[in-house]
Image (tube, rainbow, N blue to C red):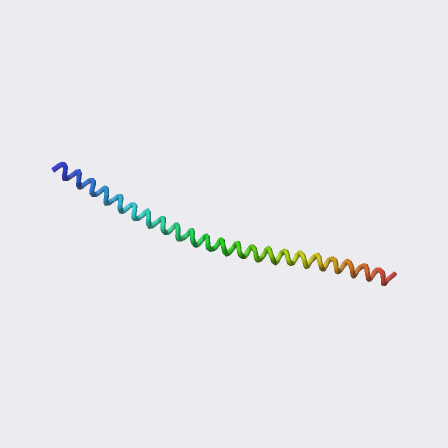
Length: 82
């Protein structure tokens, strides 16, 4: 009789461990899924940052070109007024 009780207890513990493992595995899969979503969002953000960086570099270049043109125009105006 004692052997049957021990076997039954071992069986129950095995079942509990399997259930806990299944729940843990399910949670890990959910976390992995969420991490995939986060990674996708980060990729999109990085792409957006690159676009902004490129546009900012273009804006700075255009700004300096305009500043140079304004400086040239001021020189021409001064020469014409002299």
